[in-house]
Length: 273
Image 1 (tube, one colour):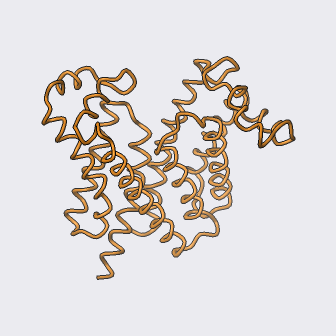
Image 2 (cartoon, rainbow, N blue to C red):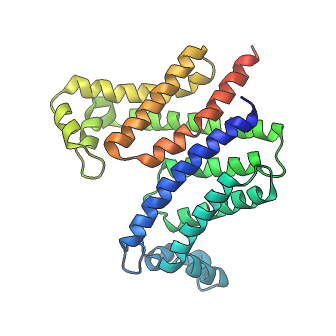
Image 3 (cartoon, one colour):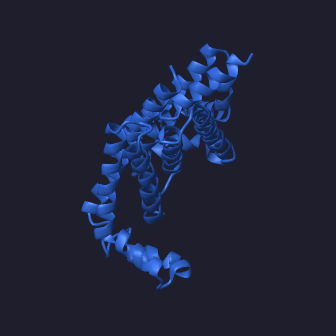
């Protein structure tokens, strides 16, 4: 595949993931969580930035953009930007405008939803910025190559840091973490929790499999092709099971969207030897 085809796959996976993410935010908005008396009330969140904006003109602009009425418009604008990215010709000025507008839109939404963010939000923003640089009117093959390396290495770094964080946790090292996660109300699954209850060695195996695979995920860039593909298949399966069991849709799309870039980097590195 050429650079453009890699980027088209990244764009498609990224767009699907953003539709899911935006739908979840719309659902929360309809439930009133972004209203004045909701959990994500702008009136409350704004207190954290008063030292920066105060009652200045910037604060007034943010009030209009990020209050309950403004936020729903922001989400609608994000959907419009995504549609333009999918239908506009790459390298065109329309695509360029839609991609940079989407980046600013995502920054505002993350700023508005500063509580409860996760790694998928950060990776999605990395993808959005890379899509802008890689498929905009001023892109070039060299810029696209740098974008692939940026995406691929950031993804590998995310896996490794996640694995290191887990190995520093006593609950992950002891094997308790997996059962306790599946036994929660937020991300739990009663059937899986029941199957894992009392099975110490199964829990230990699952915890350490995740730890080891995440820490050593970056070796997929330099290992023989069949080992690299096996590592990526593990990552795909890991995120898919998180969707099926825990409902973590955003992680699946955000991280699998980085896999074409990882494959590009892997093939490029191996072609040098």
